[in-house]
Image (cartoon, rainbow, N blue to C red; front, top):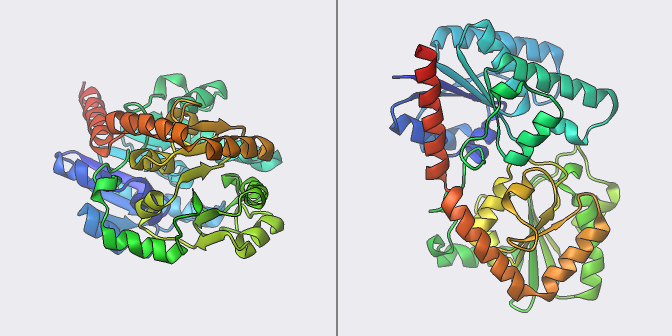
Length: 387
């Protein structure tokens, strides 16, 4: 039975970005060991995935001493477990586990790129992040950007040798759970609970924004645009589902003030029932500066909620402008305002876009399809390693 070590920096990534993947691989003849830092998410992950796990402390921020300790711990773990494949996801886990796996002599070392943090960095910090990505790619035997637009960006910037690069299926690290993200699967009592939580009123129009509340997610521009849009349409509401992350990438003070105090903004720190928020709201607004292949847009697509999002790598692999949604220039509040107004003025057309996207998501991005493509790639790599 081939053994895979699936490594992320934090357990949250295992739960939110790779849910059901380890369980699928175990059911298809692999021994899977999950590895990440400790965290409150572990009990639910273990219950869902049914695989073994190991805890190796890893810091998201750059911390030389902690990183060296983590590298050594990963190396010892890999030497002990003797996996056939080490597959990492998230930047720090990628760097440390690819280096450790190479040191330990693992033949198949895979890293998934699901976004590049240096895209929005500047100066020496950007140079450091680029160097880290290149080092990760050099240590890996295979590097899988999770979208074709991200693949093109990696090639253009010569981050990884082209012979190592490929995209699994049509893209996405994990696909979307079509059983969960389906209007037909929702429970009426839970839907009413979410509507009560946000103070839902039928005459209002609800926008939804989901994800970490950081500058890179376009929150500054979204707050600016929403204030203007609400002044023109008092029935407009904005539901922001996510928590502040001030340590790495804080939003502006003006945006924070607006989010916390605007009477038409409903901020929910986090809630796992994201599909119910999608069903409750009329439009998804995703203003991110950088993505790999955004799960949020796949989930919204599966739920049939219309989308207005930034024109960036990853997003453009899900949303095609004026065919499956509307795109605006990232960081451009004026363009976001224009596209949001266009969407609000023509909800019938937005519904057509959403229906078209839903068909595409169901055909190419369901979890079973994505997981099957990944399993087949693993088997191909194992076969080639024996030859």
